[in-house]
Length: 139
Image (spheres, rainbow, N blue to C red):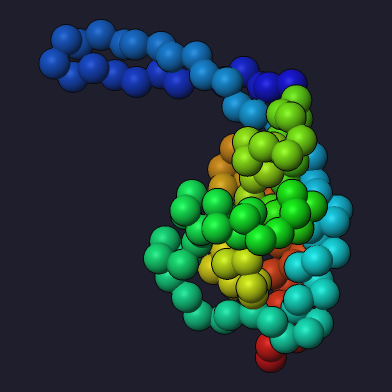
């Protein structure tokens, strides 16, 4: 299921208002991914200071990971499950929080921010809780 949203923008050159309607995917929390992230945090498998834009997995990284791992293992790195998407497809899994080896603090912040931005409250709270756990563990 998707949520409908709208965007109204002003066109300065034409002095008119244009309205756009867009669909926002719906997500459920991937409880196995939350448990996996907690386990990694407890095992101190995390990176506290990284540039998420540089270290987040790209499509090629995902493909390489999937060559040697199961879809279940791939799913453990994503806090969200896309409602209505087919299992064992990349579109099913959202909100990646690590580099397929370690949790990245910047990845959790990115998940929290993006979930909050699009009002995916359950994902936002899961990312926030993991971030708090990581900060407490690393203090």
